[in-house]
Image 1 (cartoon, rainbow, N blue to C red):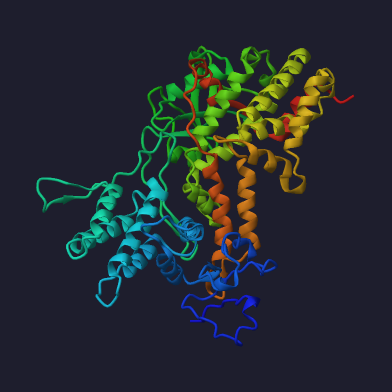
Image 2 (image 1 turned 45 degrees about the vertical axis):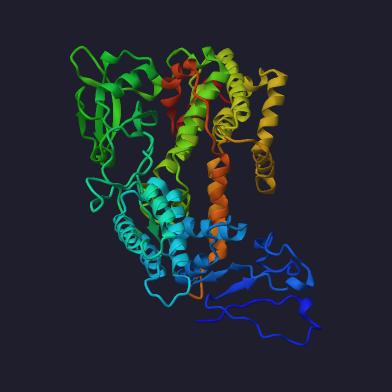
Amino acid sequence: MGSGRVRVPEALAGRGGERPLPTFDVPYFKYIDEEDEEDEWSSRSQSSTEDDSGDSLLSDRYVVVSGTPEKILEHLLSDLHLEAAQDKETETLLDDFLLTYTVFMTTDDLCQALLRQYPFTEYDSDVSCRKRKVLHLVSQWTSLYKDWLHEDEHLKQFLKTIYRNVLDDVYEYPVLEKDLKEFQKILGMHRRQNHCCVSFFFLFPTPSQNKTFFHQFSVKENWLQHRGTMNETEEIFCRVYITEHSYVSVKAQVSSSAQEILKIVAEKIQYPEEELALVAVSFSGEKHELKPNDLAISKSLESSSRMFVYRKDLTDSLTPFSENEELQQRSVRILGINTWDLALELTNFDWSLFNAIHEQELIYFTFSRQGSAENTENLSLLLQRCNEVQLWVATEILLCSQLCKRVQLLKKFIKIAAHCKAQRNLNSFFAIVMGLNTASVSRLSQTWEKIPGKFKKLFTELESLTDPSLNHKAYRDAFKKMKSPKIPFMPLLLKDVTFIHEGNKTFLDNLVNFEKLHMIADTVRSLRHCEAQLSDPSPFCCLLKPYVHHLHVIDNQQALFELSHRIEPRV
């Protein structure tokens, strides 16, 4: 085990010669001082030396650069303060470790390491303090992860074991009584029948309907646990195809019947429900009509086929819709909807998706190379939504064959984008602006020429916020000034995390590169500054839910270009 390395400030010179450098069991801990501004790790030293006088030459503040998981945990526990508030460095280190431990160790590894840190022998002069620090770390861990680990068997067994240990110790160390009560609150334990019967009931926050259950991932062992059976009230996105290249994105409960799905699609495409049928078409071409009471959503169906909506004639024979029918005259209902209310409902919908994302999903998304969809589902839904809003904007405009209505649609979407920005929903804002900038839409010169000057000016201002130059400086500056609640443009946040990951090694000489993990954790923590309680949506906005929740989109760029050239042929 290599010894730690420290730098002694230059102010030590002239004080009786050289002093021996202190050593540490934790490898590669680095002392930070204000004179080392050019050091490659100086980004961690903002508050590490608050007193630069000659009498405080060694402030005993260290930054973990790299180390073994066990030693990093040991150092973390030694720095924890129980009664006083944590200093910023310790609080950040604790959060970094808990956010990113799945990168370099499994949950079982962490449980076993914590049990080893919970002292059982008497030789330690401060046994009770050490025990309390372990309990404090477990408290922070369960608080941070909430329902993410609610079904992890290793954690369940660990919590039972350590709780029994605390029960055994509380008589010898009365100071643990306060921590025991706090621990009981966290675990949701309560006594039944008598003092000798303890019932273990783990109370984790109830997931919202669109929240899915996840387990953790370990790069070290490439360990991935599969989620349990879906809850029947859980809501997911499913695609119901109208043609080969267009579909309606339906947000529905897993237990939804074929009739319920069909009703949503019929209303969306403005077609009589009784004249439609829901058909599962396998990739080999086989067709199976779903009966009204059949479950429309199943894993087996999803993996082997796609859902289509077919027309039924008088003889109940099934006929698919053709691509050419997309341009049939249809009412452009968005023109009759208030733009602020529509933007507000888009924001409410995005917020429900964003608020369901666990910080661990970003870690898992970045480090996982396979099977990540099972553990990043909430994050994937928000990314899918962003893509679908972009396609929805282009689809609505390109399916409108009348020039005057297309002009109104463009104006409408520009206003909706401006309202999304005002409502601090940068996810839908970016999606709408990118939809308007899609090549198949931006080439509609006849349509854009008829846009009034004030709308063109407004759109130019909105576009400037999406300017990628200087690493999206315009967006970053504007978003930083926005108050919470606010929804970030998630693809850019993932890009930041991915760049940190790919530009830095996770392990240095078989030691965890904790500086890299700190940078990733710091980026992931930005999600916390976005969250706040939203006010209840207005009753009128609730009427827009069917329109906003279920988008009709064409997801094929070639099909979009064909529509674009059909409504405005090349001169």
